[in-house]
Length: 120
Image 1 (cartoon, rainbow, N blue to C red):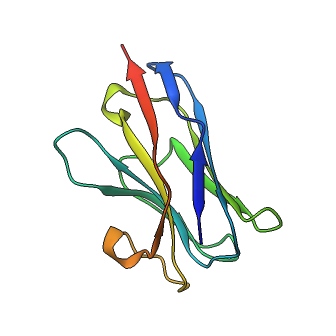
Image 2 (image 1 turned 30 degrees about the vertical axis):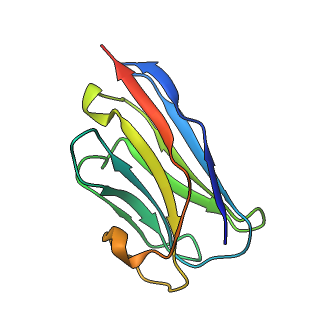
């Protein structure tokens, strides 16, 4: 399975971005992760195969929304009220298994990453 992420860019504090990730085939759990310079990759949000339930890391609760369109094999991440600390490379990932887990090591497929920069 190949994943293609898009939608990153430069945005000002308080702005919004919508990330998209298209998969080449149907997958089960999908998720968004991010990695800032000098930091480990961390989970942002994950979504089960049917669209519910979902999981959010504390960093994005109330600001980020993950969704998916299974007719397009695509997962989205709507990010609102962006902060400078949201600056990172964002990666989409997918698993063959339907489990909401935040550990990056449990995802078999990864996209190439898209850079999000939040400027103050």
